[in-house]
Length: 91
Image (tube, rainbow, N blue to C red; front, side):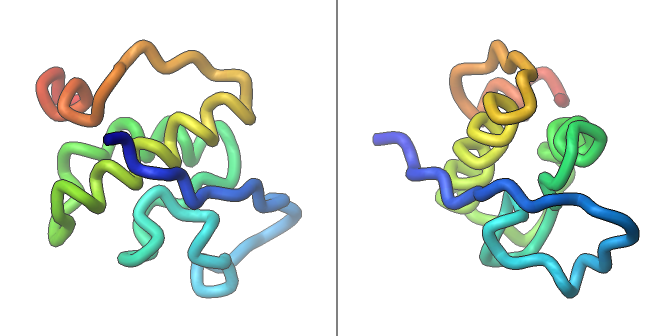
């Protein structure tokens, strides 16, 4: 069963400090890793996904759901069907 996304858009206005972002702005909300506040950060989250340490498979499920939701919001296509695809191809 696919994880439910927790991501919600956060307006990236001006200089934003990560500590000021809500948990819902991150791909990995529990760990507050990989903010998804704009297309650049989304791209970085995809690139760094395989290297994120200290997360469980369940955390990766949530993060992938969040990345896919953010990608739809930003109009970016992600062909991967599963988070394992990001790991297998080294994102």
